[in-house]
Image (cartoon, rainbow, N blue to C red; front, side, top):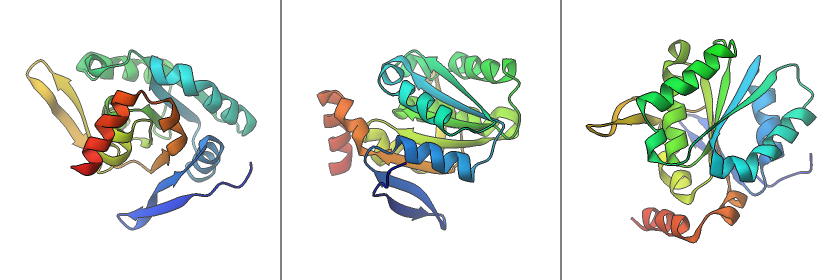
Length: 192
């Protein structure tokens, strides 16, 4: 793995946030070396998966670890952040005989981070998870702070938990594939 310039930001007494450019090899190396597991599950949506899932699969294959690497891809958008969406991911974890040592990677924007974080908080009473935000808004807001939730017909983010990720990897290279409107939404949050 070539050397990458990574900036680490400390939260709650540990270097939780790692920032850089083209970090996929670094992410996989860091996760597999510091968060040992029998199974790593990457959850993303079809938009992000089409752009970045193959790179993660290739890096996990190169890592030559005995652990399984599985991926689960959902439909993009707020409608996936629901009780049904949460149950679908949980059923996938159960069908694949995931255990308490499972590490879940959330690759995507705020919907993915919120949904996967809530799954991680409740699956087997809590498993480790990693935030890999791909939108500017998620990088500066929703991936930080440990707030996880799903929506209900009665409103947004009404059912959730606080569950801190083991790491938050901010890879600015993901912004190269971000639609201009999504980038503008993120900049508005930065300014706010």
